[in-house]
Amino acid sequence: MIIVLIGYMGSGKSTIGKELATALKYSFLDLDAYISDKEEKSISEIFKTKGEIYFRKKETEYLTEILNSSKNLVLGLGGGTPCYGENMKLIVEHPNLKSFYLKLSIPLLTTRLFLERENRPLISSINSEDDLMEFIGKHLFERSHYYSQAQYTLNTDHKTPQEVLEELLVYLI
Image 1: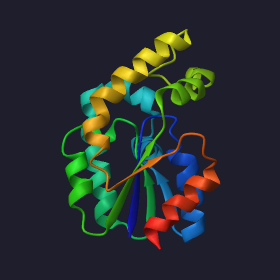
Image 2: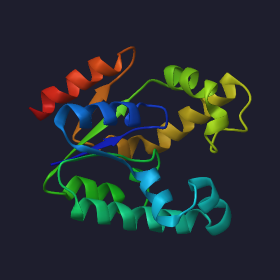
Image 3: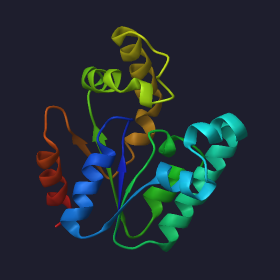
C-alpha cells in the first residue's frame, strides 16, 4: 500500500510521514527531495533556472513514476502538488493508495512557519505574522478543493506527532 500525506507546508507531512513509515516498516519518501535528487538541483534552483511550469511537469512525471513503481511507501507531497495538473486525480484513482490531509489551522501554521520562513522560499520575504497569516489564508482557500479530495482529513491542531500517528494508524490497521 502507498500512503500519501497531503497538506500545507508546515503541516507535519515529513515529521508524521517518517514516524508512520517507521511504525509500519515502510519506506518514507518526500516528493520534493526525490525531485531534487533526480534533477540534481534544489527546488529553489529548479524554479530559478527552469521555471515553475518545468517544475510542475517534472513533479507530475515523478509522482506518476513513484505511484507506479512503489509498494509499502509513505509519500509526503509538496504543499502545492495536489493542485496542479492531474496530480490529485492520480492519487484519488490509484487502486492501492490511501490519502490523508493533515489539516492544521491558519493561526498554528502561521506560528510554526513564521519561525522557519527563511528556509521556505515561498514565504521568506514575508516579514510580519499578520502578512503571513493573510498569505496562508489565501493559499488554503485556493487549495482547499484539492486537499479535501483526500480520503481522510485529520485535524492536527494541538496534537503531538504521536497523537497524530495513533489517529492515522486507526485508519490503516
